[in-house]
Length: 92
Image: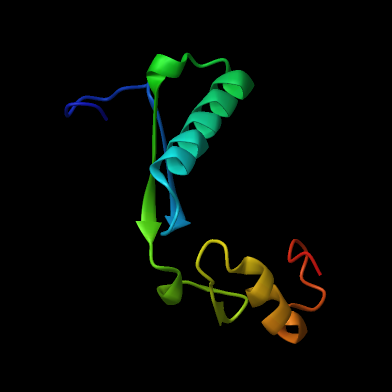
């Protein structure tokens, strides 16, 4: 819906990321997502609405562990090597 009316021309992409990134990084992320969507679907950029919501990593749990702040991933992976053993995409 757009302005209370059914709208089949717009696509909305919404995501969540951990807080702690610069505005430039966040804008580049959204831009890349929108450009990729447009490339894959053929939908014009002007018909895509996208954004990210920031959440505190200390209140997000993945693999039974609270997430690290951006930039602290290497230490987090190292400290949680046993809990993450064999999990695809964990880099271990």
